[in-house]
Image (cartoon, rainbow, N blue to C red; front, top):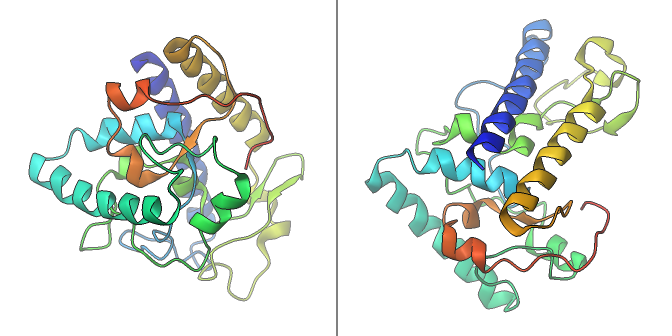
Length: 225
């Protein structure tokens, strides 16, 4: 599993390089900077691959910091379980109706991520999920396909970046590599190469052997959320 996580780390660094290149080319219209945490709010789904990679970084934090994060995360998970009793440990999403995902993770939720420090920085920045690294700039594949045509409201305030060729990236290839790594991870852990298994950041900080053993695999594949 460590080998796959290492490979995933290399893939994530490619995303960071893309984002840093976009920032260097368009620093006058991209507001993203160290300490900005406007997007570190609410909940969103992450893959088990992301969760395990995040947990690798979490485990390197001082014990007192880990405990502080887990207190915040436990409170978040408790509130979710009270409202949706079918969302329990190990807190995976794929066994619950997809409409419930939207109810659990409303866009207007401004609750800070439990991994956010008092200074507005991510405590596991080098191990943050793929979604965190992609947020803020529209995702346009090198072939011109618009995979995600939204961006942070603080960026490109008076401009439309969709037509900017120099922010494009081979995202389709990137996501294909991510999926292959994910499926191989699932095969090694569960003996079955499923394509989707999702959770949330507050649950990732509690990942251990016991909780992984409790995971219920999807009975059938479905289109990604």
